[in-house]
Amino acid sequence: RGKSEGRNVYRFFEPGMDALMRERRVLEVDLEAALSKREFELDFQPILDIGSGKIVGAEALMRWRSPSRGLVSPENFIPAAEETGLIVQLGDWALRKACNVVANWPRDMRMAVNVSAAQIKSGGFARSVIAALAFSGLPANRLELEITETVMMDESDAVLRTLSQLRGLGVRIALDDFGTGYSSLGYLRRFPVDKIKIDRSFIRDLDRRDTAAIVRTVIGLGAELGITVTAEGVETEAQLGMLRKAGCGEAQGYLIGVPSKASDMSRLLHSQALQRQSG
Ligand code: C2E
Ligand code: MG
Ligand code: MG
Ligand code: MG
Image (cartoon, rainbow, N blue to C red; front, side, top):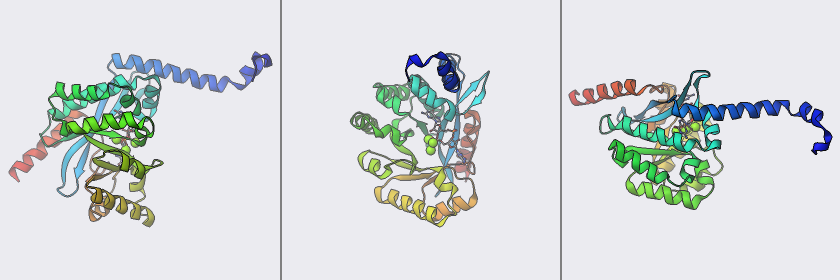
């Protein structure tokens, strides 16, 4: 639409959009300030090894404790952080923090950290990971990077090189939200992956015959490929029972534990370690 149509017309049609765009811009500016004000936190959700019944690690999940907005979910701020590029610094912070935390946990605990496409494309990602490992003293094989298909979708050569380099150091790569994308199987063939995390939408519908068949097939696929399979969003004993029967390796979800503070997680893990020594 041309400018000649006049400002009134523009105002009539655009106010809603303008408000949304303004709101988004305010969010982006607030996010940037939030990093220097240390308003971000990590919660940790335990991951269960189904066979042994032991917690074998945790996933770091970011939260924004904003004085004006309250506790903001990552779903509401990660996209904005990705758009401005702030995710590179923010992700770097999360990586370092998560490595420091798990370095103080029992030695058999792993830490999973979510990684955005923008971080890997930014160039210095491998260096960031290496620095986080060095600063924390964490062995590379205790760190797992969770990536989604959006990471693999474009610039796949550069992404592939970076992931292969990290994997060469012993860092594990997990394919997050498996089954929700366009070409999950294709990516599995092209990218080096150590773990598949079945998206929680499949686990939610496990009582449907077709969904159960898909989940069993993904578990079988993992076995064929020698890849660990983790079920996300496990909320009921019935779901866990079905997954165990199907030979699923790991489970994560509210049934096993909700995301919680590092101090709560470390208490849980140390009591488990003591139990193991005496049991
Ligand atoms: P995700 O990596 O797939 O993480 C799992 C999400 O499922 C988390 O949501 C977790 O709280 C939730 N969840 C876990 N168990 C259950 C369950 O039993 N039932 C239900 N309904 N939900 C469950 P959260 O913490 O809101 O995080 C959402 C997404 O935000 C994550 O999905 C991840 O994609 C992204 N995210 C979180 N932290 C980071 C981060 O540090 N960096 C990046 N780039 N993304 C992050
Ligand atoms: Mg994840
Ligand atoms: Mg997921
Ligand atoms: Mg997700």
